[in-house]
Length: 156
Image 1 (spheres, rainbow, N blue to C red):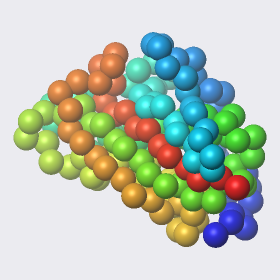
Image 2 (spheres, rainbow, N blue to C red):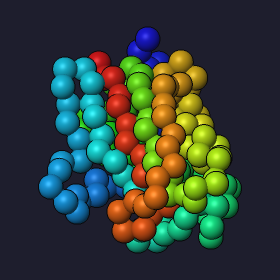
Image 3 (cartoon, helix red, strand yellow):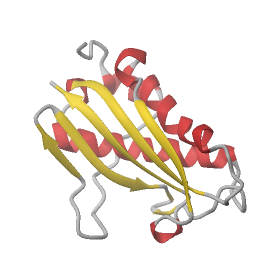
């Protein structure tokens, strides 16, 4: 199941420019490769270079959360590119784990996370971009960010 599409052409079509890898703000590294799997550390939502602060169900709606998750997916792609050197080497997006800063009665975590999941399918196509995932509501995320997502990818 190798990537026969040119991922960079698709990114250009979507108007996406890959960002550089963010500098960790605690004691961790942005990614670790073990065999053919690349594990990307959690990325928080950012807007204009700063944490995208908000709580779903209180001051942030589902559509805004989806936009934040999509922005995180772009950051994850930048980190994955730095990890492997060529996104065309990606054989599969294996899993996303999404943490949504939300009130106790917010129930649309899965819809927020679709912002990232749908972008992966757009960029890599449905065979490579479709993935397992989990979406959780949490009481808080570092720096007050509205969403945090980590990812596992398989590469050639």
